[in-house]
Amino acid sequence: MGKPKKEKDVRFSKFGTVSFTATTKVNDFIDYLEKGEVRGTKCKSCGKVFFPPRADCYSCLSSDMEWFKVEGAGKLITFSILRYAPIGFGDDLPYAIAVVDYGDYKVFGRIGDIDLDQVQCGMEVVVRANELPNGQLNYVFDKA
Amino acid sequence: MGKVAIIGVGQSAFSRAYPGSIRELAFEAFREAMVDAGAETGDIGATVVCSAPEYDKQRSPAGVLAEYLGLTPQPTFYAETLCSSSSTGLKLAYSLVASGLHDSVMVIGFQKMSEISSAESQERMGRGADIQWESPFGTMMPAYYAMYAQGYMDSYGITSEDLALIRVKAATYGQINEKAVYRKGVELQQCLDADPVANPLKVFDCCANADGASCVIVASEAKAKAMGIAKPVWILGLGAASAPVNLAGRDLFNGLRVAQMAAAEAYQMAGISAQDVDVAEVHDCFTIAEMMAYENLGFAEPGGGKELIRSKETYKEGSIPVNVDGGLLSKGHPIGATGGSQIRTIVLQLRGEAGEMQVKDPQIGLVHNIGGVGLYGNVSILGR
Ligand SMILES: [Zn+2]
Image (cartoon, rainbow over all chains, first blue to last red; front, side, top):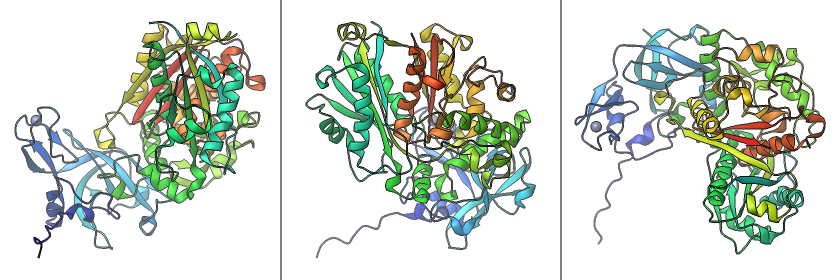
């Protein structure tokens, strides 16, 4: 008998309608999403803040990171409403993607419970962890 | 460093579905460039092969193409920056010649997009962005550029009509470019009535996928002289830059920072300013991309791009003709071949050999070629 097979940590395959990455050192992001939190990372050594979260700091070369919560209102900088979708996303149509400015960092994601014709540059939004109909997880922006 | 010339250019017709393999497609551009330069295969010291991967089954196409073109045993290698791959190829070729490693280098760009379906192609192109953090939201190229269009409209108050004017211009010249995939004229109302793809971009704001190949032969001044090249076109300036792949890392949403930076670098190297450019090829994969290019290249102030197109200053007879070969919007956009095709257009313009598309007596031409959604920026300045 060989050694028991080591389980691969593929938590990140739960991210988004279709995930293209299974394994990453920031897999805990998924655990936070499951708890209803959207988190980025902050370098413990130099204080640099990252969203999307990263495992490594290019600024001071440290890999000692802590998780911070994306909280409060951010400002929607730009968006687009998709009328066609790439393979695997057709059932989500129509949907909108957006970039939101939180000051120290920006967040790229999907529009949530906002009528698509109400979405505007400059509007205040909050981020929310979201479970998709297919059981996958992502995060979306709602009106602040 | 000695001067570096472009001594030969070639391009296949761009088409919806090329009836042959990638090596045969590349041969069409290769033959035209070789005849143009009056070169023999022994004149070529090395080849740089450029495309975006994942469209064909062939792994490592450089060796396959080099063999088919009779360019073995000379060294060959692959270069990739998505849609700007062959502009990157030009920069590499310039470096190889300017350094003295080779006295002549060929840049071959190709793409056979018809190998896969349009939806598959959108998915592949979408994966030219951040697959870990963006693609899971269902992104694709038109939607990314649409976000720039939205940001631009919000900043400068342009309308869909201003963008449509760019498509109308492209179609004006697509009709007289026999190598373009889209040869029909386009009316303003047609653009405005078209279905949205990713708001605010509509069908006519987007370029079409295409199959195609391009070829550019670069040589040292001494080699060009030895070959008796009658009208060498000189590489005066090259600039390139990269940006964070995830839009969350960007600081500008009404222009492309990489284009601004590449342009500044290229102008400095050439010792010229935007006002000195007589004819330009810009990366109009979407109408908004050309509008931003006007400003990022310094042809207009930020927000002033709309005046250029409204007053037809970027038409052939205007103060700064842009994409008078139909641009990507009418020529089609075979990703790896596009930069080489733009370079070819400018070389023909500078030689006075652009036929019906010829602008009046240009001395300096510029190529603006973007990879991904402002991920890679490349500006090349050429002169007589
Ligand atoms: Zn750090």
